Image (cartoon, rainbow, N blue to C red; front, side):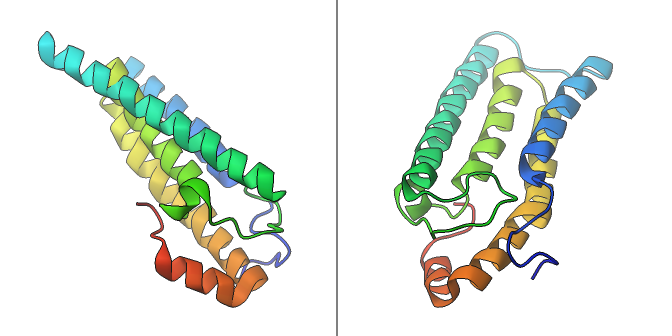
Length: 158
């Protein structure tokens, strides 16, 4: 468990990681733009990016709604008061982090920014290590068997 059994983290790492990844993807594209398809392929990729952004938005909104309705922490460094297993949490244990990943991928597709794909993969790894693993330890500490049963039923990402 973390040094703070009463909460998963002292610092809300996942949103910080997301913002750094987003800024890094844009900065690298500005410094060193990479080639991107043109014409119809570009248009199809751009449309795919917009659809992916909408999917990310749906994940965010429905996950935040479930957390809010349960009256539990939304920020990743606060103590969970309830184990939320409804809504998008039925499909993935981490719908908000999955939304972060999808949104970075959406930016890459919609804006033709290959760096954003590297940023998405890097941020998913960092969120896993600094956020998810600590949150899962916190949830197991707080909810014991109920958490372990949920963890067996629902995958971490998808």
